[in-house]
Amino acid sequence: MAERKIDDFIDLLLYERGVLVEREGITMKALVKDATESLQYYNDKYIRCKFIIHTGDLIRLIEQNKNYLIISEISQFNNHFKARLRLCNHQLVIEIPGQQVLVGYDYRGAPIYEMSDPTFEYYYSIVENKVMDIETNQPIVLLENEIIALLQDSEVTREKFIEGSEFTFQGKTYTVIGVDRTKYGLLSIKASLSV
Image (tube, rainbow, N blue to C red):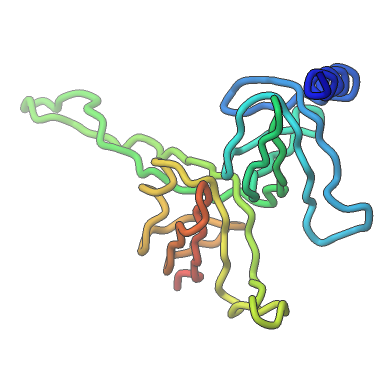
């Protein structure tokens, strides 16, 4: 009986206070609130929803037009889920080179090829230039030309962001020098500025 009332209360809150979010192209309602009352460096939020979510899911808050990554484990209640979101502060860009396209034949019958324009793939990510020391809980600043990026761990990102691969960040080319998949659903890469 008490469980039913809690479920009804969540339904009422979603109906009255829920905001539209998008996950994997599907729009749904969820409760989203700031994770802290005070100002913090990170723009973290909590999400409560009735649809299944996973660590590493990319959630777009439609009204704000901002993308967030689920960075925590998922708490499951009677019929809803809760997780912590962090704002994706950048997009990593991978250039896919153009391909040779047959455009015709010359007077001898030899094929004439032209290169098609390159295409670009964009990946929402959380990019930082510092990490926290787990023993002292103090920030460790990376070298000036290094970054760490947190992305959704998917088949695509596992193929695109491997050691030695290159991507563009803020107009500069970076090379992946390390990959960490120890956090379920999240892909962490360390990259250095290419010279």
